[in-house]
Length: 355
Image 1 (cartoon, helix red, strand yellow):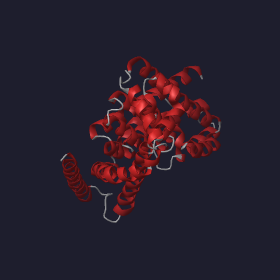
Image 2 (cartoon, rainbow, N blue to C red):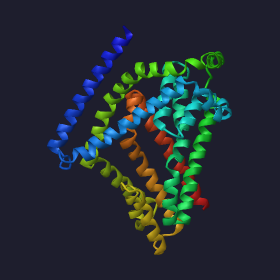
Image 3 (cartoon, rainbow, N blue to C red):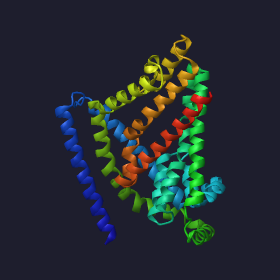
Image 4 (cartoon, helix red, strand yellow):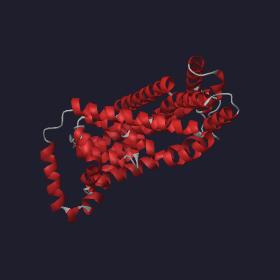
């Protein structure tokens, strides 16, 4: 009966989501100049389909990791740190998975939370700690593009953002040690997992396919029900210029108060879809002697502080609200970005006064 009810709820959520999508899209076509039928396939439908494809792959990977007994094996890699933080091997496994896929890591955390293997506090805290592996996902490509453009300033920028990541990760671990209470049933659950791994090796492949058939469709429908309307709303707001208005206001406030007006182009171009534009402008201004290395680093940090949270809302909010509940996903994303900004402000101030 519960399965039938869940299917009905998922179907209703999908119907409501599609209705909201239709209303928002209709309003955009009627009142927003940049939203046209000709642009929708390239600007909305294809990016949305690609996002849903990656989410589906992440959900499959998370289910496979959980059902094939790899949770403990992955969790062992960062076990000492997560044991110290009272988070356990399951959160450690999600942390390791985050080096390859943030969607898989979040799906794993949600499964553990629903099965009452981790608490809500452990769920949130691990998601925040997972910003550390997320930092490295695109680092190789960005590093070797940015450093040739900005040289010393680029190296300092990466050093400071990495230090900010390390600072907040350390604080999250310390917070877990003092304020997170490990579940009393954790040791018993671990012993059951160990026993299951030794007794059920021959049965792992079959349960995986069964679990995928049983859980994946319903879960994916739920994700689609939230991702499509949220992504559509964000798309319409973006085309309407809502995010640009916020970015321009924040940029001018930052330039007037923290960096010289010559740095305005660096901060503004940090918002460009091609992220290298801001760094290219920084290198050109620095070579011309218009701004110093220190001013360049501060301008790049300001661009990061202003642009990245808004980009996170644009690109991560749909799948956060799809994987988690809308309220939990929104609060988790906003809190995580708040901690990220606070850590960058901290290292930026230290650099401003000491550098």
